[in-house]
Image (cartoon, rainbow, N blue to C red; front, top):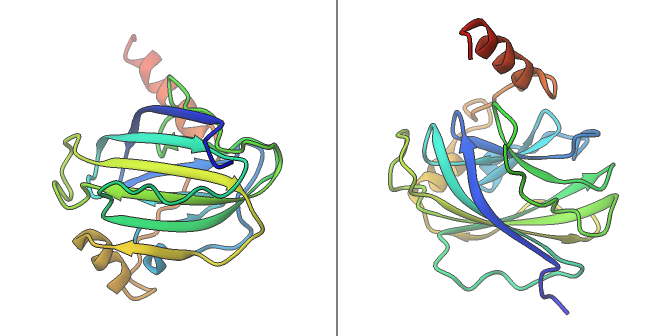
Length: 195
């Protein structure tokens, strides 16, 4: 049965065209994966980095965790890609790049620690490239599976085509601060401003 055992929906903050799927206990992959392979997702600094059209703002995200591989969603998605992830703690969490989620979406790791396949669906990335409106929608499906190479299942948006066309030396790479550092910096700034 491929019905999701967990489904959650909510806004996720985007900074620098990115949000993450991460395991708080360690890296989700041992090697970097260039996002230009799929135009949608890659591995950067041990986290799965999802590339958005908007620069800053919120995107609409639905997560579904499954025990077995589901079919790709038949909706009007412009890009669909898959990547393998490892969860050392059994928690694969969707998070903004710069801060933690206030209202957490459910973990994508339905069966505890192990290796998972993450399928990402995206639409709306061409609507406001480099701007900050709320125009993008994402569906993340996750299920336990052995590791396999990243795969592009659908490629219809211009933004993904641009990312796939970049040479490896042109690929956007963002270095991440150690986990929790952004939250600490945000708290220090808030206290210094009297908030």
